[in-house]
Every structure is written in C-alpha cells, then in structure tokens.
Amino acid sequence: MLVVLLAIIATWASCVSYDPTGPSAAAINGTYNSKMVTAITNDLEVRHDTTGVTLALRDSAYRGRFFGDYQLADGESGRVAGTLYPGAPVNRVIVSHFADWPPVAHVAYLAGVYTNCDFGRATPMYIGGTLRGDTLLFAGSAPLPCTYRLGGTVVERVTELDFQVLGLRVPAR
Image (cartoon, rainbow, N blue to C red):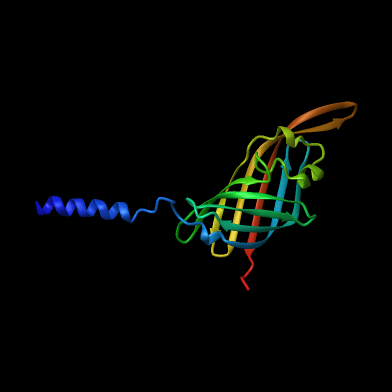
C-alpha cells in the first residue's frame, strides 16, 4: 500500500512541476545591433552585400517563441518571429519569419539590390542559428530564380541566395 501511495505522489509531483507553456525565450529579449550579409551565387555571378540591421526581440511567454521587428539601415522595417530552444552554453534559434512568409522573400531591400532576381518565386528558406550570451547569429539559404541578358538572349539561372544576420545585444540602460 505504501509503495502504491508513493507512486501516486511521485506521478502527481511530476505533473505539477511540468510547465505546459514550455521553455521561456526570455534569454533572447533585447535590441541587437547587427549586420545582414547576403550573397547570390550561380554560374554567371557571385555577389556579396552587407547592410546594417537593428533587431528588437522579445519573449512571447509561450513555448520558447519570440517575436519582434527588424529595421534596416535604409529604414525598411518588418516582422521577425521564431523559437528559442534553450541549451548550455548555446541556445538554438529557428527564425520562422523575417518579413512576411516565406522568410526573406519579402525584404524590399533585397529586391532592390538584386533587381534581376524574382523574389516572388523564392522558395521558403530554413533559417537557423544560435544565441550565445549576447551574440545572436542566424543564417539560411534557398534557390532563387534570376535572369540575365547575354547578347540578345535572356537566360534564367537558378541562383543560391545565402542570408546571414550577426548581432550583438545592446546593454540595457
């Protein structure tokens, strides 16, 4: 009887200590001064571009999810959202939105820089990374159709778009 009672108490205690909302994403809260680095690569062109970006991120208090905004150096701004998976000493980050869905495809700055590429036909990009202390890094890549004029002929090339953001959290005042 005592063994059954102890088993019931142990089961109850394990249920009570479980957090149904999952892990917190509070570790990601803050403003990050960042650089966004992009590259397009195909058999006709290799090009790298960099711009400043500020990220303002906060915990949604639900299952490790976070949300916030980005603002590029040219003033463009948009939504950022994702999930933080706590770990020691490195937290894993998955970014589900950087601008509208699919991620990165609706960043107007990129369409302005890579004018020969069709971001409307971009495939969804998996964006993953890490949060280590005050350093946030996330990156992804996806194919992107780009057209080129060669002589009098227009050709389309499947191009790899590489995307990376590296940021340092600004100390709270």
